[in-house]
Length: 128
Image (tube, rainbow, N blue to C red; front, side, top):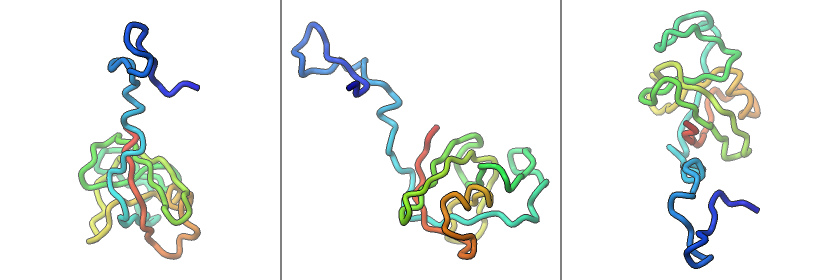
């Protein structure tokens, strides 16, 4: 079984060559934020330009965040169900106090039991 590293041939077999550790293995499972509010966009925004210049589409896996760079991939996890979805940041917001991220309806429906609540408590993990 490979763990992303290999023992040095010249050193003791229990030592790991520092440069052989895969960088992506160091980035996994690092939560950006935990226990934050996620909401979803209303359909009235369909076809409007987002802050990045892309047209908004509630059927895509995109999201709005106030500070993350456009193009950042974020894994949004519902800790109650362990359901998750990966979205790409392409807009700014949410502009409702206490909310951390706005998801498209498509992305929200993947992690929510229903859309009736309007928001969820989620964990956010930066993918890239």
